[in-house]
Image 1 (cartoon, rainbow, N blue to C red):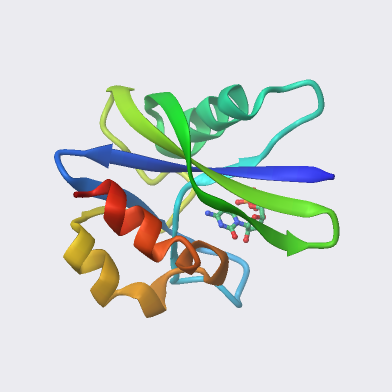
Image 2 (cartoon, helix red, strand yellow):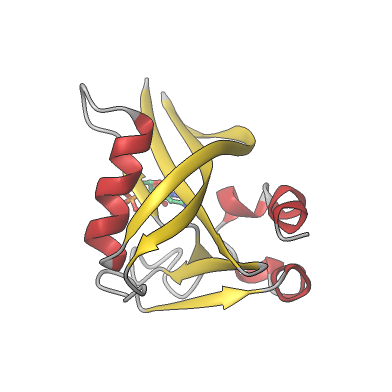
Length: 128
Ligand code: CDP
């Protein structure tokens, strides 16, 4: 079983979204940034590593958000609540980043990658 972990980074009632640049099927859609957990790595430290690579910031990681989503054969996607502890996000591997309120997130639900759209109400709930 492989795990992909994604960050629901929240600041002042807004959620950080990152716009995928590849592959073609999801290029232009928005996701919670993250990536694959490597062998021997905890989910939390994998997420901190991926976020440092992708957004050039350090995060603190909290509780899971919503239920895990099955991505395909033997791959699950989990989201963890997270906070910035150092730096300002830069789209090093994405096309762009943006901060959205719960209302804005609902309005752009069709522009989320399919797996992350499952968490829409969980994410809106995080934003209060
Ligand atoms: O390895 P690669 O950079 O292509 O992908 P990744 O960003 O590490 O994500 C691995 C897999 O999880 C891909 O199939 C992504 O589409 C998926 N994913 C997702 O559905 N939602 C996220 N928030 C992050 C990744």
